[in-house]
Length: 151
Image 1: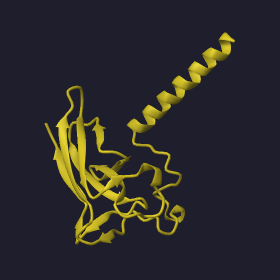
Image 2: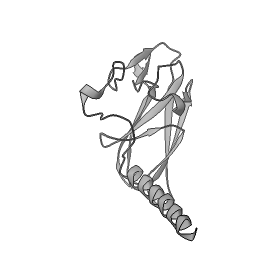
Image 3: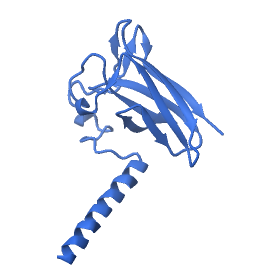
């Protein structure tokens, strides 16, 4: 019995460590390779914006230095709700998630308003997207914020 208990503890610890290390390196279990166009299903387009009227979402981002390391980002949205359960699904008005880029590289999907960046510097871009990953645009203006983190 003790052996099984130690095995279970080892598996849980190893899995948790693996998830933390993967997240630290920006790896996700997205189900397909974003670099391979052949794996993109119809409608799964990260580039073509979803154009909305004047009542589209708004976004602002506050970056606060974390007392231990890096930065804490707080996303404030208008007319938008995070819907992690619907990511990759059909678009629905007023819901989706955000994509986070640092120095031009996508580092994460954001399914809520807070994220920690363990970096001291960089050009940050946060983009609100629909469930189908397409960037949202309201009256010709992208629902995105771009800023630079520095000491």
